[in-house]
Image (cartoon, rainbow, N blue to C red; front, side, top):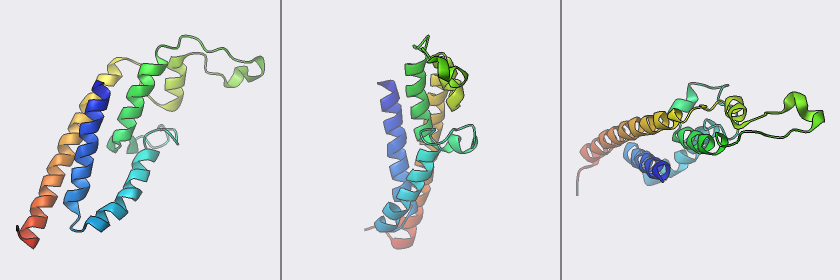
Length: 141
């Protein structure tokens, strides 16, 4: 439940950020689809995050996926493999996490929490700056 709460706060700050930097609601909703696609690609669901290491640090989806993956795969001690797949088989949960570029320790979850908190603060500050700029240019009603 901590993971969901922290991710929810980060997602709300992302929404505030998109609302704050664009003057028009329609521009924000149109561009958010493109930004969401890039953030989802950088989360490790579709591509291996080892290929684009720098991109994963801006994606709050990555931190959520890593937290869920660590919570699930660290409990898996053994994966049975077919003899014909022996060369391509990942034998335990730690091997799966390493293969997909995620952390392999329980302490990596707390690192993800800290990164999400930092990203939340950065997005809130940028949203405030954008809203302040929009109010100054258009006036406050």
